Amino acid sequence: GGAVDWARVREDFPVLKRQVHGKPLVYLDSANTGQKPARVIDTVDDFFRNHNANVSRAVHALGSEATEAYEAARGKLAKFLNVRADELVLCSGTTFAINLVAYSWALPRLQPGDAIVVTRMEHHANIVPWQLVAQRTGATIKVAEIDENGDLDLEQLYALLTAEVKLLAVTHVSNVLGTVNPVRDICRQARKRGIVTVVDGSQAAPHRPLDVAAIGCDFYAITGHKMAGPTGTGALWARREHLDAMPPFLGGGEMIKQVRFDGTVFNDAPHKFEAGTPNIAGFIGLGAAVDYLSAIGMANIEAREQELLAYATDRLDRTEGVRIFGRAREKAAVISFLIEGAHAHDLATLLDLEGVAVRSGHHCAHPLMQHFGVPATCRASFAFYNTFDEIDAFIAALEKVRKLLL
Ligand code: PMP
Image (cartoon, rainbow, N blue to C red; front, side, top):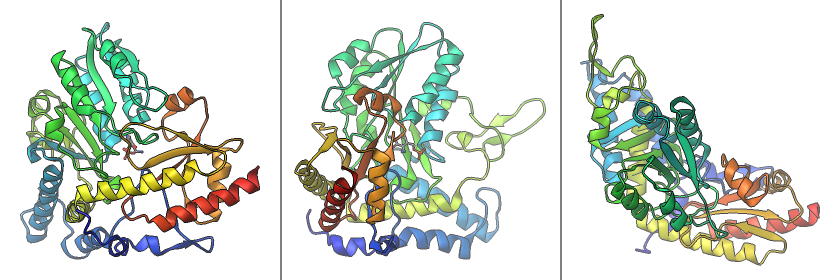
């Protein structure tokens, strides 16, 4: 369990040695994108230097090396999520993954009178695609609400799951509140009623041991850049029966078996959904990221981040004027906050001058901001490579900034 040398782990991240505005960087924006260990950077570099070729097209040595490494990365990611590799569609990220479900699963199926349930705490990536589907099919959208702590109101959610509901879209972990939703229970309730479930795993996969098969959802989306991998990588896991029934989303090379002008035969899933040249180097890098995270151990990562979260929450609670948004029963290491009387962007701008990187804004969750009646919050999000000293530096900077602003 607790045998990880976290100071040693931190050394793996070159960018964390940086200074900004003459101060040591305190990177508290990992929910936005995660930093990359040297092993991932070197893997991408090595691919371009020594193996670069396209996948699945060439029989030459480099071509087969690239294809093997790309498919090996799919296998690693599948193992990490505990799903079958042939049920894992590689794509550019969660946004693409959810849109794939929207366009290939929902659009051909939904009709006027049908309903889609989303929650108040969804990222726009898990709202807007459903609004587009609703507009085009005549389906309606129903919203599951949250309580004052940022937990889903499960009673209200289950009451929404009536006969006209065909699809339920829910995030595993909120990128704003850190709320960890009981997705296993939620998916069981949905399944009992024949409702298909889409779980947004963007903020779960980087931070906790995952067993997607055990969740019992129909679709699970992840994004690679939040889990130590390169940007432009992600995946959609889907049950085989859905993948086989879904028409392709994009057409082109790689996704076909035979093209004739009198009828084209598509490739089998997951390749059916992977038209065109993929982000080969990126996925090989993501494979290295998965190896890296697994070597530390996701349970160790979760425990470490929970310690950082508890410490930071306690220190913020003792800081004058700080309001924290989200006190969920189970929470990931994300803290949204404001200082009463100060604007989120002013706070973040002044914190940046102290070397502290936090995000400010609506965090792609307008409906959640509307719920709390604020236009924006600041968000400090932690990863296993952060330190208790950095939290002290963050609080010291916040005290200084508060005095400047008020
Ligand atoms: N859902 C959640 C909960 C997120 O935090 C994010 C990224 N901020 C996304 C979806 C979108 O991920 P991407 O931009 O990588 O497609």
